[in-house]
Every structure is written in C-alpha cells, then in structure tokens.
Length: 162
Image (cartoon, rainbow, N blue to C red; front, side, top):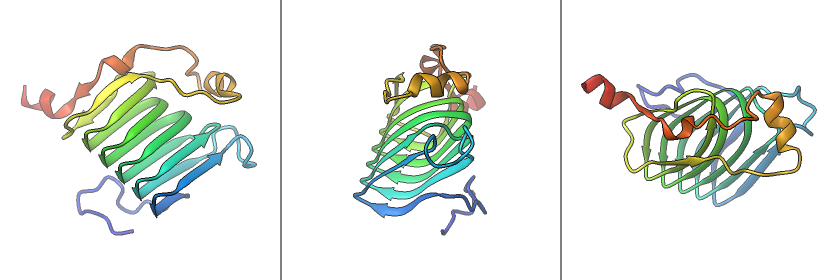
C-alpha cells in the first residue's frame, strides 16, 4: 500500500480489509478462533463500503476511507483514523485519535477524550451499536458504562494555536 510521507501508518502490515469499493465486509472476532480481543486490524483505501467488526479487537487502524459506514464492537486499546471523508463511524474504545477527517459522523463510547487534528465538519454523538452479545463484549473491554467523553473532543490543532 502506498503511504504518504507523513502518514502515521508508515510500514504497518496488519490483517484487515484493504483497497475495496462498494462492498459489505464483516468479521466476527468472537467466532474467528481469536483470543477475546482479536489482535490488531486495519481498514485502508475503502470507498463506498460498509464494514462490520463484531466481538473485540485490541487496536484498529483506519486509513483513507471515503463514503463508508463502519460499525465496530469494543476496541480494548486505541483507534487511529487518518484521512476519512463523508463517513459514519460507530466506535467503542479506550482512546480515539482522528486526523484529517472531513464531513464525518462519529458515534462514540470512549474512556478518554477523543482527539481530532486537521479535521472539519465532524460531528459526535453517543455510541448506539447493537448486536447479540455486545453487552458481554463491552464488559470484557471495560467499556460497559457510558462516560460522556464523546461530547468532550480535544482539537489538538486549536489547542496548539492557543
């Protein structure tokens, strides 16, 4: 996969869904023979796709998505999103960092304040994903309680300017 020189994804070689268009893709980590956290997973170079990741993963890396819908069960570590445009994300994670997002909606449950940088037209709301077993998955990831942090977003570009 070609990388931008300043990309946070330089050199990553992870399992995931990459270079797809107008597809519906899903992975159920609770049934994939993985441990309860499923390891690390990457979504990269997707256009007009719908992605469903159920169960739990340890970390999620999202790079270059356009007009996608991404539904994710609990992430026990962090989610890093770079270069998303016109997307909808439903994410539950301990930490979420968003770089270069444009006109995206984020439905979040997080244990710390979400961080954005160089993003415009992004909107935030509480997590609303549901599937059989999600309560168990959220409890295992220590994300069963709504923290309200989805409404307390830190814009690092703005904070640096101040």
